Length: 401
Image 1 (cartoon, helix red, strand yellow):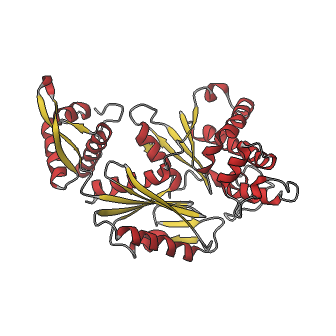
Image 2: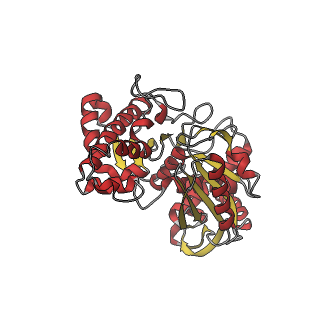
């Protein structure tokens, strides 16, 4: 049995499914432990040493694993260790947003070697996609080791067809099959993951041996969504849009959203809505430092709030209240043990936490609230980008390569 994880032998599974799961289990275990002996892998997974040896040999042949230094084996004997081959292949990951995108180069252990943020010069869907494709081609030309492209896409994203049904704030981004778009441009496997789900995958991977198997990654950035992992598996729904909390109405008399609903959460607490709201208050706060720069960004607004700018504090506090309402809905709907607030607004944790404390106390059942922890994603890691890479590693290496 895998320590801290499920048993990977299940009635009803095809032999090929069991093989894939066992292979995936071994790779994740080695990735988290850096180097292990075959006997240790056998002990921790519950697989026979013969089965482990067969899978390891296959992965070495495919240059996914490599033998390394001697490590302590059973009964204190020295054994040859195996580890992820982080030299032969690379994964290119893309985090697609509305005003910019990020590309990152990852090894097979899921470690980022470099990343780059590119701002869009247009809010027209076709022009945005051309820019992304151009940057991907430029990066692919620098290294022949790339074997897969992982993309984290905003939702609602239909995982069955590969279609972004709608990207708010963008002209013409409606029912675009981005899987077909990228597959037609690149001779690599293209693995697309909903952005909030990608964040959840990366958070779960980081904490899989020490934290709960029930968590929610609450994405609050240029869009709003949630990725839910329950007992180690993503909750996806019929078409992969189970976590579209950004389009849950919190004000039935609110403004019309492009999705067709009214008063959607995203309209009140996305980074773009905060920027737009700040601009509407420009005449009332003419001395605000928010407008000192030629372009108003959420990063600058949060910095201004930290420096006690009245307008910045107002718009961040207002948004934080709605972020807290979203968290309350996540708790009542999915009952996760852990919520990780991530993406751009995680930097406003001081303001969000103050509203969370009030909202959860006023609106939550104590027995449920007391068993739910809420933390903030590390700012130095783009969990959405990393999740796109991790999913691409698993899908391309485990299932295809």
